[in-house]
Length: 181
Image (cartoon, rainbow, N blue to C red; front, side, top):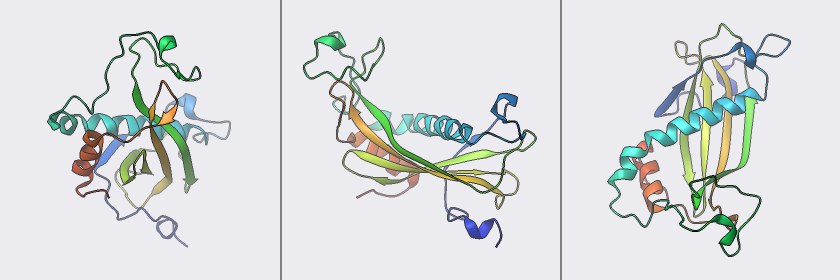
């Protein structure tokens, strides 16, 4: 069975690609990228993907759907979850990783060229699912890993899920080229 037969994502559309720079520190004693580092690659690509949504989020004409800075310190917020620290900006809403998986297809080594494709495949009421594909940018059938992230939109003060803002849903739809039910 070829590498291509093992991967469901080959031939499917990813609109956002993030170039990887494999660092010496990413390698394990066997001289290939350590299995845990792939999650960092997914995180970097996810951050890049979300940054690419900015123009569409700015098209959304209401401030109600955007994060607001809180004027009061976090500890005064009723129902505050002390396990979530929002930093000096005290951002009220954002995402948390609920689940993340990685399926390894080929080992990555220091001399490999690679890129990470990221896409949103499902948007629910309070969460969304993203898929990731690490491949060779020249030979697209050479797939190193595939992954999936379940992200929850969260009220950081309560630690509870919160509805995905319409501006974010709109941005996902624009990036992916279709509506999410």
